[in-house]
Length: 181
Ligand SMILES: Cc1cc2nc3c(=O)[nH]c(=O)nc-3n(C[C@H](O)[C@H](O)[C@H](O)COP(=O)(O)O)c2cc1C
Image (cartoon, rainbow, N blue to C red; front, side):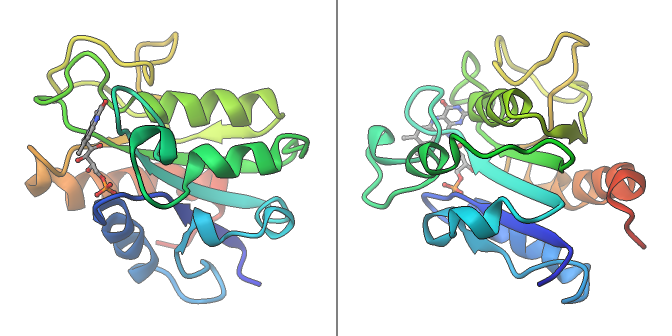
């Protein structure tokens, strides 16, 4: 088992693409191949010391899943399966994909939902990210310090910034994740 688990939810494939971009940068011992969370085993998921978790926001500010009109299950259905797990001692970094022009009042809201879920279950969340360079009205993913609680990516409007943002963010979590970049 690799040291870092990498899980994503997706509707149209963009979040899978981002997960693959991350995995490409690491060997198999460091990072697991990205796995769609609808195929994840709850016990295995909770056994990683380090996790990178990625989600789009769908519906109007929703986690991906059947409530957001997806045909497949996703984070919405997976979270109840790990409801009683204890994540204390685990280090988790989050990525949220969204569309700031199409959904300026719910930009990357699902990122905030994942953050709340894992914080409540004792995890150490790392990888907050400044809101500079984004234009939106409201986001549930902005924490008390005014930063996003994880990396916000907008492949709909700013796909040209994705690689650069990803590299900078990975260098930021390198120390807590004990990564060699
Ligand atoms: C029906 C629908 C609803 C969406 N709702 C939101 C939203 O509330 N907030 C947001 O930031 N992005 C929203 N988006 C944009 C997606 O999060 C964005 O396109 C994302 O990159 C999709 O990732 P995926 O290809 O992995 O599913 C929505 C997109 C669709 C198609």
